[in-house]
Image 1: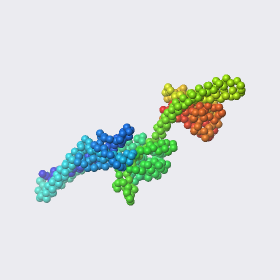
Image 2: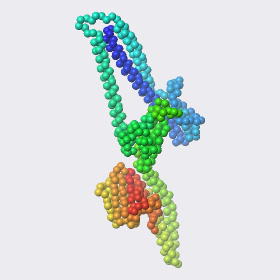
Image 3: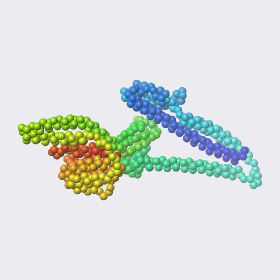
Image 4: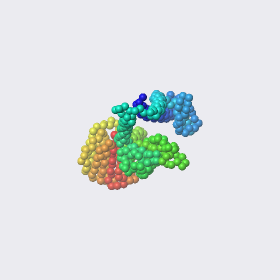
Length: 514
């Protein structure tokens, strides 16, 4: 065999070894990822097993997913891989409420894992074979180099030129391979960057040293800070107004979730530890940058969701209150009717009799109002409606001047119930001495209506009481107007708030969540 051909063969063998070694490393990584996925799935199955047992009120028993479920006298949350006769097994310890625990055990196996292990073995054999072939070719090449070189024939190219040509060809092939790998890596990086930039969840990634490395546009919008302002900063400095949230993200070394109420918003946070420091868990004297894991925090604004839940709970409470109070109001009304009948029959003291009759009639009117309040709101119609004309009509009925915004707001709601709401608010404004009503609209995912009057306003001490039945700051007031407004607004899937307690002129804000 010519030395140039042998040299080319040696180069091809080295390239093949490089390719097969990379493929073996790839399947090693796939095997590791599959094993971690099996362990994560087993942990989830163990959690579901405990939840089902707690839900059914039965002690945790056998599981179809696990080979063995063993009670423990005491257990700390733990995961570990142990060697067994049938291969690796995962053991998961879960604590119970009584201080005891359960040990879940199953073999770490799957069709994909077997495939990856088989391919890794084949590739390992190929790497071994190519290594031996390279060694043999190298030895033979050295033997050929030591032989006496024959005189080149006239016109024949020198062996050095052949070597250079072969080497150049091998170099070009290697350059093509490297360029292909770079393109694949660049495409993957672009895909990851696109996902991070366009995700609607706020993403914050912290390095093992606790410094911000990723702060995507959604996170910038949530916290009002640009990436350039927080890059490479410790999280506590990057989010100075959210110290509790920063502590939660940095605490612990397991996946965890929590919600934080920052006043204006409610933030739901999921924290996922990523990788581990070189020295594992923090120990005595371990440098912070090497002792902790990196962390990926996923943050989202759940303010609207929690507000909708609060409105639903409030509506359910009003319905339950109405059902309980309706029976009592009915009995009181019957007794008042008897008292009124006997009072009218009294003729000895007409002045006292008239006072008794007036008081009974007033209480009767209050009971009638409360009975109407206690009845549930039924047959809510959902149709497009412009609240502007409804507000204008309610204000005109109370002789109030009204200032409507230039724009138009379209709601999906019940026009009849909205008319009752606006009429009660206009009547309340008139009784407070108002002469005009100013209206503001805000179109958004949750549309908003703001109604402000120029009356005497509502005292700060009464801000929470005005929504209760029978509360009134006026003599002989039934106190059912704003209570009825609150009930109907809740039934419409909305919420009403007093924005300026203790200030002149009442200002109400209605937010429509559904």
